Length: 262
Image (cartoon, rainbow, N blue to C red):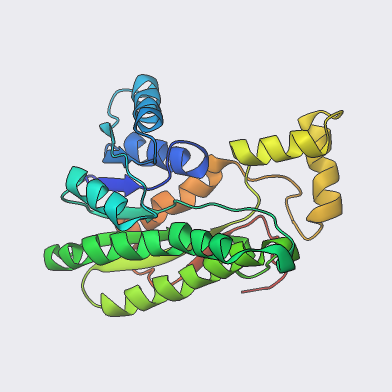
């Protein structure tokens, strides 16, 4: 999308949507930093993308660090001193009955899903403003708008990301830097595949997927999991020059799960 080579950091990018996003930006020729908590797994993901790369793809480099902690963010920032595009994708989720969610679980979800992006944006966005160009993208979820009763701690963090993203967009207004949020719906990540196989052990994935959406996600208009690459396409667009008039926005890639018209 852009002829200029940019530097891109994608947190939580050793699999799923994060890895697909790394592939999308690398395909455009950008220098991409893959991030994960485990150094070996992070290197393996970077190598996997590099080995699959075709002519014209950009470099893919590891930047390990636990971005849920201030120390981990510092190590990532030291490994990636300059940045044009930040994708705050790191996240966790668990399903827990509402009255059994511990304080520790509430805090862990907030630190991973919200504070990681706050810390990194606080570090990189001022330099983006000084250079007059930059992109910050938070990866939220349809659960921010349509929170399942067994995931209210997760939905809380995803809703918080909408406020954080909009707030940072106000602070960088008129600078050439944009800040947006992407809201994926149910996506066929390794975690989703494992969940489906455990829930429907005697069925093929296709049949299990069909039954799952009929029973648990009947509002979905596509009646299937989105592919990580389909979500990555939206993220890639928001990271491009072409998205310069889109900021302070929340864009859904939820397959129509959320039953609203806006």
